Length: 300
Ligand code: FES
Image (cartoon, rainbow, N blue to C red; front, side, top):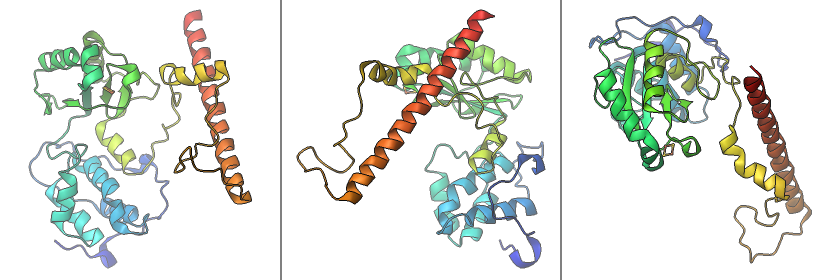
């Protein structure tokens, strides 16, 4: 397959700030086995992504997410397009697309529901949630409901064990779930109701989320706090006890090595300490935000 860049592809601003508002919705025939032609807009955006990186092939991961946002999965045509833009073989692209589990070879529904069944979530109820959803939705693992709304998959640890059992919808966290709450979430999604992550953001569709992963922001990144109370418990304990990170344990240096006395090294350590203190202050702000939110909820 060849695509003449010089004549067919419209000029695209190389910047990343492309609004989803200008994004043309994909064909509703999302479960067709026929590969649809990628639009000129998509070709242009694939080149735009490749242009963000000193080595164009570094853009392959977000390019595959863009393909999924348009076609609902990684199609053979999408693989060919990525290969052509990057000047690599389709086999190389396919090797990446089949390695990572976030790339799908079967069409995904409007909402990808991933239930964590890794160790901690499993013992905290993740296995029960997954079984209940399979039964309720009448699907197996990695299958989509007949109405095309929900794709169910069991997923590995989401690095959110402090909120186990955790479910993800289009990669947004749904913390501290139960079988009943999980069923409520999928039913609200199927009914078209607005559903929010337990951490704040509104849930968008899977294709919209894939477009964000391709590097086209939807301006929802600031919805909700950046960290929840359970993740900040350790910080609170350290703060209450006046604990700080050891100053001499900078990365790459063992406890036996002398502390560098050169001004540059000291300046570097000072910069690290200042940055760390900034992180603590930001996290303190998150804690306060959580306290305020809880206070408001309780006052209702
Ligand atoms: S085990 Fe489920 S988030 Fe870690």
